[in-house]
Every structure is written in structure tokens, then in C-alpha cells.
Length: 380
Image (tube, rainbow, N blue to C red):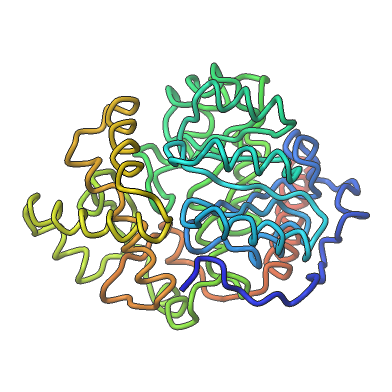
């Protein structure tokens, strides 16, 4: 199944307002809304196999910033996905890249030529990549999990930071959101906007993030559990059945800490030997190469670059393709027993699968009520 074979259902109706009303003043105008040209300072993260054209367009049409996941698409699929988003909304949206993509330069050229205003990265892009994006009029956003990482990407020239706390899904750090966000805000000062991520799913979390000094929020799991998310309904139900203590952060998948739902497969991976995991990872790497139409030489060069620039040990480089292929098995093919379910810890308190427009409308209503409650306490 192609990463973005969603039906083109035409323009998406938007309660948040498309284009003409996207920049109407709201009580939640921040540096993030001004920077991205959006109505609400809310970002839908670029989740691989999840954030396709339909989810991205729905988020942007509702007044937030949708971000298209591209690492799990080959180049031609990316071209088609961008066009589908544009057919559904004229509001700003972004694209998400892995810094070590073998054809990153070509994809950046496409981003620039298509006039996409935002490119986000799961880690730190190179200084040259940031400069090229800026030369093409594209904003650069980087996700960090520690204060020192924030200081590094600011030096590289990024335009905004997503500070993801330990509660976040997928690859995550060890510092809780409530501690990380103030640290990152203090580290970058007034230079660029900071968006809080990890453990946020509603208006109360939104207000809490603003109180911590953030200019907005970024959410992954909450958007995964919407109608427009391309994850099969049966898998979404599995997420809804997950309790707040039913997730685990493990290195058994690809050598890096990753928060997923605890399943029998995860338990088996954690018990297996390094050799066994490396053998499975090699199969995943070859499958991912075929899916993305990359040559063996390209795959080898990418691994060498990862080893040299990020300092990853060779066994971890070998395992790097494990996560996307195991994620695809669950989130695309619906084979929960054979794949992994990346998630934030917040999955344990999510109880519904709304449309994106309803989600954002309810979040803003709840945030407004929370703000009014705080103001009434201050005025007493």
C-alpha cells in the first residue's frame, strides 16, 4: 500500500476558516501564529505513515498548521501528496523531513519550488540545509528533547523549536514537558518561538503550555486519533483501549528510546538478542530501500553519513529502518501483532475520534474557558 493513497475528496470544509479567515485575530495570537500565518498556534506533527495529505489539509483548513510526513514516501509519492494538500486547502502547511534522507536536497528543491512555507525536522538539520531553505523562503523548524539540543539548533539558524517532553510518542527524550519547555524557553530567550509537545491533547494542556512560556503546542497522538488520520479504524480502537500506564519507552526497536504501546511484540524484542534484532533490522532496511526506491549504494552511503555525523554505533545504524517498517505493519496494514504502535502517554486519556475541525474547535473552546477561569481567580 502506498504511503499516500488517500482518495481525493475535494476541498475540506473548515470550521476554523480557510484562507480568508485564517489570520483573523483571536485571544491566542502568538509569535507562532504570526510566523506561520495561521489562526491558532497549534501544529500537527509529521508522523510517518499517519500524516498524509488528508490529515495535513484538514488541520491547515481548520486554522492550525498541518505537516505532511515525507520520510515514508518516495519522491513521486511526495509530489502527489503535496498536490492533494493544495487541492484541499489554500492555507499554509508544512513538510517534515529526516535530516539523513538520501535525496533530501531534491526534496528541499521541491519544497521551495512548490512554495511550501515550512519544513520541519525530527532532529537537527545541517547549517547548509537551513541556509538553503531560508534562501528559498522556507521556514525551518526543529524538534528537540533537551536544552542543549535547543541551543544547538538555534545556532544553526532555525526559525522555531518544538520542545517535546518525555511523555511524547515515538522517539523521545527523558525530560518531562513541564520541565523541558521552561528550560528551552530560557535557553532561546526571545529569539524564536517555542512550541510545547508531549502529553498535550486538549485546551487545558494548551493553556498550561502557554503558561510555561511556549508560543503554542504541537500534537501527534491526538491528531492520530481523528477521522482524517489514515490509520485503520481497528488500530485506532486499539489505541483507545490503551491505559495511561500501558506504554513503554524502549530501545529494542532501533536502538534509540521510543515510546510505544506495550505489546507482545515489544516484549519479545526486548528479550531477544542483539544479533537477532540486527538480523531483523537488516530485512527491514532492505524492505525500506525497495519501498523508497533507493539503491544499495545509497542505503550504504546514508548509513555511513549517520555513523559519521550523529555518532551512532554501527549496530544502531543497521537497526535504523526497523522503526518505519514495523510502524508500517501496524499503522498502514493493520497488523498490530506484527508491528509497533508509537504513541504519547496521553493516549490513556483520549476517549474519542473526532474530525480535525471538531477537535480544534473544542480545544479552543476549552482553552477559552480555562483562560476565563484563571482571569476570574486573578480578579477576585
